[in-house]
Image 1 (cartoon, helix red, strand yellow):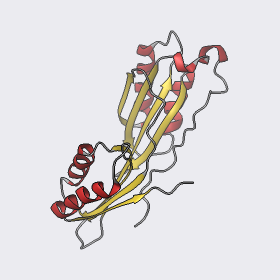
Image 2 (cartoon, rainbow, N blue to C red; image 1 turned 45 degrees about the vertical axis):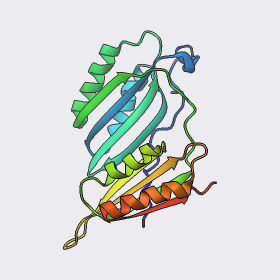
Image 3 (spheres, rainbow, N blue to C red; image 1 turned 180 degrees about the vertical axis):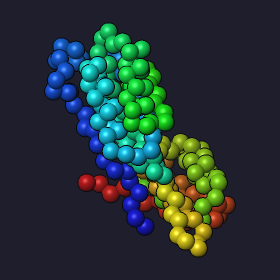
Image 4 (spheres, rainbow, N blue to C red; image 1 turned 30 degrees about the vertical axis):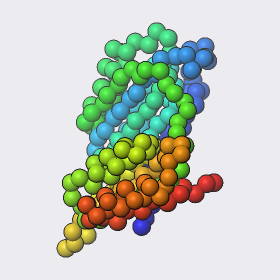
Length: 206
């Protein structure tokens, strides 16, 4: 099955070259914001959004972007300089969004960040005829086993004259002391109830 990993984000973390260094010192102590945007895919979306962020001396620390059913979606975590005018920032983001045809832009403050992200240990794939409930049943089983999802991708595969097939791939982190064999047994029940193929494999290192 073709890999379903999201494409690498177009934005790389780092301090904008034109931003005053004094406004971006001690990034770990500055407030952080989350920016989420979605709209019909077209060139220039990332450039428009990041141009506004740069004007306000915001530093992009993490980002993820992809195209979902013809719509471009992006999430960015940014460090905000002291004295940021959030109202003006929202207005300018909305104006930029209108100019490039975005359907939604959300900007919100984040609480304290934890840089200690869980390390994925296994890859879980689910594949079968599309129907409601595949994602929920699978993730409910993972939650019951205290398994942390670190990455999730889905894809609907449609061929003329054939039933649509649904593909789900997740990178997961098993809790300390958890048995992969026990999780596989629980996931077999998911496969039987949903009529899908479920595979759990160790994540290759390197």
